[in-house]
Amino acid sequence: AQSVTQLDSQVPVFEEAPVELRCNYSSSVSVYLFWYVQYPNQGLQLLLKYLSGSTLVKGINGFEAEFNKSQTSFHLRKPSVHISDTAEYFCAVSPSGGGADGLTFGKGTHLIIQP
Amino acid sequence: EAQVTQNPRYLITVTGKKLTVTCSQNMNHEYMSWYRQDPGLGLRQIYYSMNVEVTDKGDVPEGYKVSRKEKRNFPLILESPSPNQTSLYFCASSLSGRALNTEAFFGQGTRLTVV
Image (cartoon, rainbow over all chains, first blue to last red; front, side, top):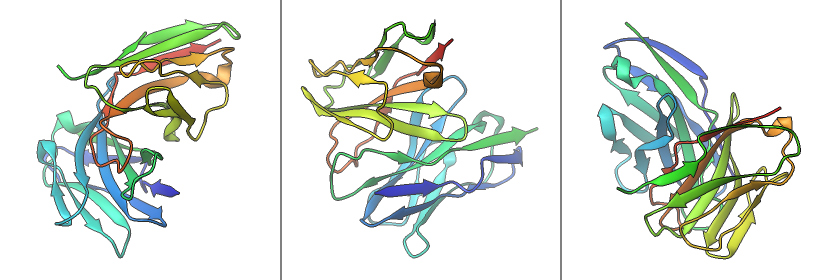
């Protein structure tokens, strides 16, 4: 089984400042890692994913994340945020070896952009 | 346009009155699942389906039923809703449930209130 911990439930940031949303995971098997974004009153949309290869993954809207196997982390970063980035962000994992477990989500981090 | 469609978007019902939330995808995906989203708890999987006529329990299946008679549809049934099932529900689909390295597509969500 897998678990995901998002260390911050809320992150307030000023517009144009950098941001990092933290995610740590626990798993007895290899995993794939994902970040999803949920804009107000909408469903979840994939931001980026790590499957294998380069540990630095780039996604949509200028976001990137770095997989650190030794620290079991997959932190999400953006160098300069915009008001439109205000949303709920979810880190998720799934077992890379197959199986029907689906996605295990963290509890989410609410990113609040202040003008 | 590739999409997952849930209906209704909003529903208020009374305790004990059976209801069904429909979910349909137009991407010929094998894997479909239902999640509920609650504040501070993130998304938790209710049921999933690996393919037609194949369904299984997720993390929080109590009080719910599902069926998968056709590939595109995966309705969520609450036979006797209770107030603790008040939540935001999401249907999701992906190409395959095995080695979930494919993107999961989410519906817009159904906000259910049980009074």
